[in-house]
Amino acid sequence: MENGPYKYFKDGNGRISRVIRVGTRKSQLARIQTDSVADMLKKLYPELQLEIVAMSTTGDKILDTALSKIGEKSLFTKELENALEKNEVDLVVHSLKDLPTTLPPGFTIGAVLKRENPQDAVVLHPKNAGKTLDSLPEKSVIGTSSLRRAAQLKKRFPHLQFKDIRGNLNTRLKKLDEKDDFSAIILAAAGLQRMGWEKRLGQLLSPEDCMYAVGQGALAVEVRAKDRDILDMVSVLHHPDTVLRCMAERAFLRHLEGGCSVPVAVHTEVKDSQLYMTGGVYSLDGSESLKETMQTSIASDNQVEDRADDSAQRVGITALNVAGVAQDAAERLGTDLAKLLLSKGAKEILTVARQLNDAR
Ligand code: DPM
Image 1 (tube, rainbow, N blue to C red):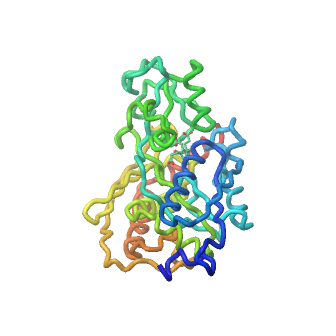
Image 2 (spheres, rainbow, N blue to C red):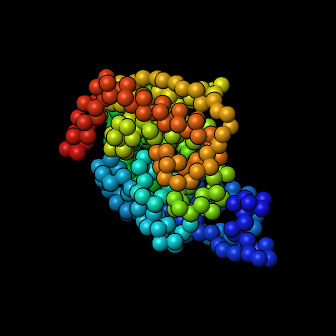
Image 3 (spheres, rainbow, N blue to C red):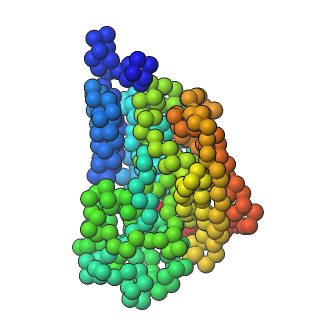
């Protein structure tokens, strides 16, 4: 342990020399996510003193506008990054899918944790308990403000209608249960599970029905890029398969120049040292779509990455302790899949989707 990440945090007597402050948004989901990461760090470094600092972000304050309409990608992250920059906090826990594929200079994702179920789930109004999207009556209203979910599901379930629903998970569930506006809403299974709402998890959407968002289901720890001690400390939280899948997904989205305001979806899998990836782009009503699958070897000679400079960052992630060749292969896979889709007309589909969404 002499040269391990631990040393920095002990004083001459072997006691902790500083408190690590962990930034979080104030929503219940954000608090749960942050607490789970703090607990893992405490198990790994029992003498660490952690302090949680909760903040509201712009994204939490603008609750009446659809996410895809607000435009700014760093909606949920800017205030937290300001606090990181000013050394008010040392690390910040996010849902990876809320982090842009290019982070502002000076920041990096120092850990990507083991992905939970990345699938989307149907949460039904209590009066529809037991139903599926298929069996809901004609013109039933489904709540989601994700262009990605709406585009895929409109195509697949033409008898349904889709309407925006905003607010944090608690607000959405309330809007569903206490009013008669929605027959069901679509949420990430991972979020439901973290909130302890498994009982509300209705139908899980298969990749044929709805592929998930880039990074969905994985938690990320954002840190100051130059803070090698903190980077070393959090890098033990990296889950290598999740890192490689999410790197490929983020490279795909970045190359398509997508964000949360375009309908882009993915599906990835790691099996026998192969990384498989399916990516799709959709028109807003789902009538046009392109979907392709590619794979790459992520076999490595166990030569792990130990550089922490800018050149080691791939799509905003610094994955110390994960094989560099595998990271390169994953990033290339995402980029190559995006190039393939672009060669088939993805750019036109996304440009029109963006224009129509802006005009909504
Ligand atoms: C992003 C999207 C949504 C969130 C867009 C998308 C869903 C918005 C909506 C980028 N961020 O998925 O196509 O449904 O109106 C968000 C959730 C989680 C992280 C909640 C959810 C929890 C799951 C996770 C919101 N961000 O998607 O149901 O950590 O991946």
